[in-house]
Image (cartoon, rainbow, N blue to C red; front, side, top):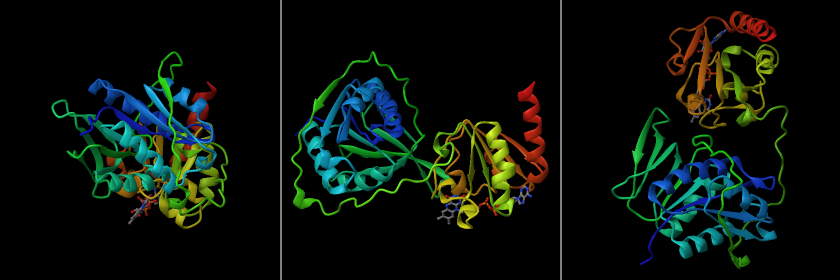
Length: 333
Ligand SMILES: Cc1cc2nc3c(=O)[nH]c(=O)nc-3n(C[C@H](O)[C@H](O)[C@H](O)COP(=O)(O)OP(=O)(O)OC[C@H]3O[C@@H](n4cnc5c(N)ncnc54)[C@H](O)[C@@H]3O)c2cc1C
């Protein structure tokens, strides 16, 4: 029987560089591998992975398995499955970590089925049980109203991790590691789909996921205009981005890309303003990782005040312009 050892992170590239989810997974994987006193490995697949492989080492990997193949430029489930399955069977990692991303959500269940193992999706925290060396997985349950802690004794253990749930290490280019070219002959007869076209999301200004400050508005704003004026003014002043709960996106007041929550983006800025948002669990599932939540709502009983560190009870029409003016004064002085 194979001896299972080490942690394998299935990395993702974004515009030819290491994707931010991969740096986050490496940060978490490093901690787990150190607890186990075993290696942290990273798989990178794509047309050209030389530079990202160096980045992966700088962000904590001991070994990077690099698979370079022009046919693997874009993620495609059937071909990527062949790569990961072969690597896992040859290297026997104790645990396999993917992002809760388009790729991870698609690939992880297929791989878990193929390996006959368990999978915990959308994890928020991971640790190692020192007695059993098994991965302990924390994930949201009941529509994010509670968190449950799981483990499984089927090896390799598999998890996907929510973006922004883990922190990357500081990049350290003096770190050393090994880049190991890994050869896979893709069986084209098993590849049933191909990407015909990639449509880039139109990005205007700062991306929500990268913004240090998010000024989010809800149904209580009543229409599109306050998003473009009152909220945008505050967001611009703080070098942040405007976001929304689901109803404004459903109503077409804001683009769908600004929708935050269980079915939208997961964000974790330094400061999150929730303005005229009631604080339904499906919304807070997308923003509860924020460092500081500030709520503005006319209803003192609104659930958002239970999530928020600071809150103002009042109409947004009065509170937000007053806050913006005060901040302008403070920033000017
Ligand atoms: C399967 C599923 C998935 C979902 N996914 C998501 C998701 O990803 N993201 C998401 O956001 N929702 C999601 N929802 C919807 C969610 O349940 C709530 O309905 C939604 O979050 C409510 O949005 P809201 O807080 O903007 O609106 P409301 O709940 O209507 O709240 C509006 C708030 O504005 C306040 N208000 C009104 N006027 C003013 C004013 N002048 N000044 C200040 N405050 C005012 C009110 O007091 C109220 O608290 C999902 C629901 C389901 C069933």
